[in-house]
Length: 378
Image (cartoon, rainbow, N blue to C red; front, side, top):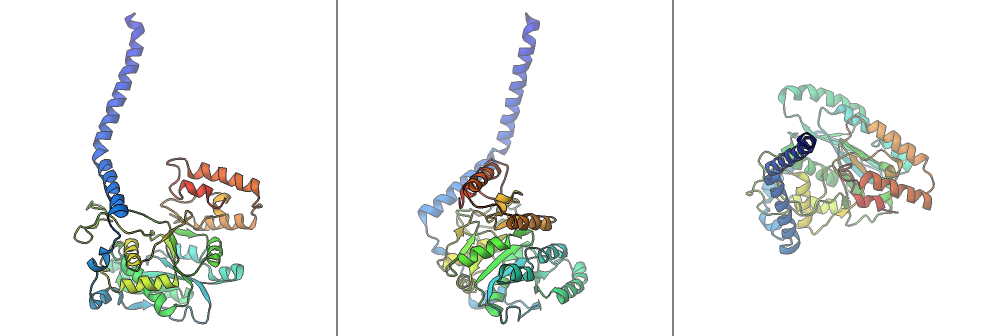
């Protein structure tokens, strides 16, 4: 009888050990999880119930002289006449690092190819790469000649003389806004994107052609985001810099689009505020809030992950994040899907809805588009 009960005892013993290990792991991570939950709850409460962020204008305002030092950097590479004589639908700035030549090349040969866009889509889009100086001096002089030769060939690099670091991303935002205001004010829209982002340019162009070119700001909207107070994080913001519990709404810097009037108003606000705030997309949100501008969420602007490879996704994709070596592959799939698209009839729409539910709505499978994107436009 004892012999018969031993396997059952071992089974319960294993279960007990598993429960204990799970409890230990939960306890080990509880503080981090708890802090994260509490921070977000407080942030949302603060955003929705206690304020309208009217404090920002006064609290972050600086003198014109102090503001100018952030935006008054010297151009090392520039193309002042890039927009001349053209009815520009979209000025598209790609934030890039000096050494990322292969990424720029992939963009030039795919979604950022201005000739393809003009020939196939019948509109003028100007694509420029926003650069600064490499932070390490030993590479800087070597890259200087490489960038000069690259720019001589492609005529699409805009570089200023500040250091290209994470903490200077707000300066790169000011570069883009300032360049548009100075050299391309007639462009109907301004887009900013990272160089690891895939932009489905046909979908985007068609969408912009149907859109109102006033009070327009779209992307993946972050609402009620709390400042990061962990000093180990690159997103850390001190309470001295930003003492409040929540950021205004903003769109991540990986990809968003502004109409020309919104870009102009945000740029004007940036010339009155403390641009030492280094998280560029949050600073954009702060400037917009000062001017009474709110972003519109578009579910097919990407989150952190790559979009699933499927024609039902390509049909509505705007951006997909995290592409370093596969931009050409994604472009081939997306353009082939567009050229060979099956009808948009009921059967096709039902099929795509079911497919997108499978690709986007299963937890932990995708962090690109939200589940509600499965029903977007159906």
